[in-house]
Length: 317
Image (cartoon, helix red, strand yellow):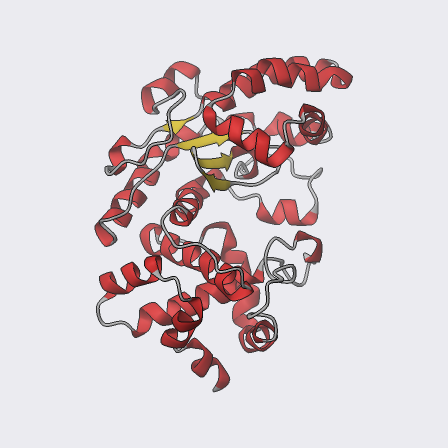
């Protein structure tokens, strides 16, 4: 992808800091990329003296942070620039190869807005928050009070990108920049749906719901499509295992379990199980728009599972 200058980014995106306010119109969403620009301005100096990289990043990146990066730094790194710098400097080939893809986010703005317009058509009460794109050192993406905090360097794969320094799970999770519409829709759904009740079942349904709705509005599963390759081949086996744990509060075998990733079996299969429950619920409904509204407002996840018919269908497979 070609290099996009700051001037062109400014022409295509709304840049700069923004306060935490939800808005009604998709076209008014702020896509904040100033943190990416600040990172790449700091990066050369950080790599010239890696022992002092944390000071460079603190002064030239975090001290200039948008509200989104401020929140990201606090939540993901507890304000420790040393840990952040270590994550960056230990992957010199990767970061040297992703500058253009992280700066090509502007090209995805039409697709992102199209996805949000479609979401608003399907669920008119939806409210949108600002989207902050940050270089996060592979600490993931999240939905928080200031808005959506998206780790741009974790969705920066593409031609010429060197992933040799990444772990197996990092390589598998590192999607192309064209996956951004799906990713930001997934995270936006987390700011719309109801909170977890503390059980594995509710946590898996929430994640699967975000994937399901993101696919509904973008037409693609994004990077989590890899879970469906394995899941579809082992669906009944996964459901039987999930049932044994779903009423408990431990999620470690199903969500955020990157230590369990192997070449044969992906981690995060709770996303797949939750997706299948939501897919079954939606398929049974005659009024699809109402089904989506009910899905996003459900607070009783046990009843939602029962109404989906997935438990009964799976037992007959």
